[in-house]
Length: 213
Ligand code: 3PG
Image (cartoon, rainbow, N blue to C red; front, top):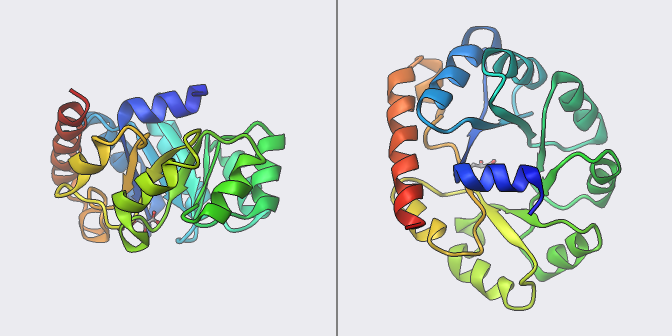
């Protein structure tokens, strides 16, 4: 796997973040994730100011991997790169955005859940795909079924993953890492519950270790 895929896979979980108040919350959130042992974030463009959040998180924790999520346009890609994002995540497969990122050597994880999506991804030489929304699209059973004709891909399932099913997903060798918002919910962030976020991250790290024993 390429360097970014190797780093993300080593961490094992990717918090999917929507920050409503980046000026107040981005830096303490980044520090909490790092302290909890999960130094990676997918900062979604679902909230205005995602690019500010990316910049502030990276400044607070330079060692952290900060990427952009819910990227819907090439303009989002440009904004994310300008803010210092190191990877791009899209909810679906948009060949224009994938091509744009590949040409810029920008790691991209497009959302793919069907054989048609996987075929499209194959044309771009991608190694890891986002499998989204994971639980709603058939979960682990579908991921395993898709892996039979497409053994070249590993996936980052996101959607419906929590502490209850994280181990089951991570125990499957097709899974590179799991994305989720359970450790960074709106309640936790908006009420600045950094200690709870640290605890949830630590629990996640334990599960990653157990699953890969
Ligand atoms: C995403 O955008 O990847 C999902 O909304 C995260 O899904 P979750 O909230 O079920 O973890």
